[in-house]
Amino acid sequence: MSTHAIVGELTVLTAAEQKESLLAALEAGQPVEVSLAGVGEIDTAGLQLLLAVKREAVERRAPVRFVSHSAAVHQVLTFCRLDTQLAHATGNHDSRKDVR
Image 1 (cartoon, rainbow, N blue to C red):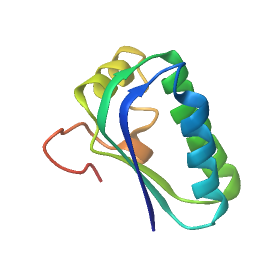
Image 2 (image 1 turned 120 degrees about the vertical axis):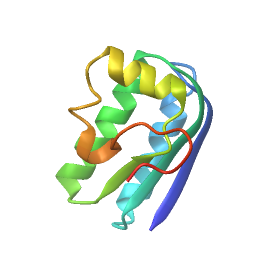
Image 3 (image 1 turned 60 degrees about the horizontal axis):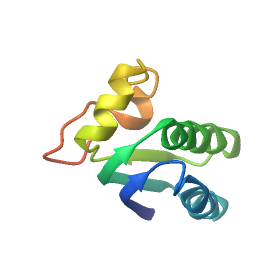
Image 4 (image 1 turned 135 degrees about the vertical axis):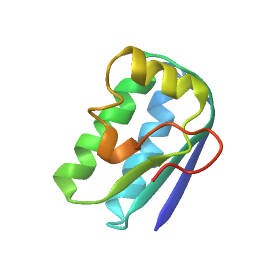
């Protein structure tokens, strides 16, 4: 399993860099676990990135899990009503432990 931790902003300023890294991890064909615990800020570009990675993983049949959501990630997913749509990839929010 490949583990990738996003720390800091997941915004228009950082999404392109994160996209390259996450897609490279998917190309390896191994399951990918993405920790979102360190995300302090997320905007629509960051949200779009998470959805694109999920879509790409489904197309490649490569499992991806988003774990340890920060409060910022949880707030955006809930506000956009994507918490349930991404439930099988993201689980329920609990900032104290990995979400499985």
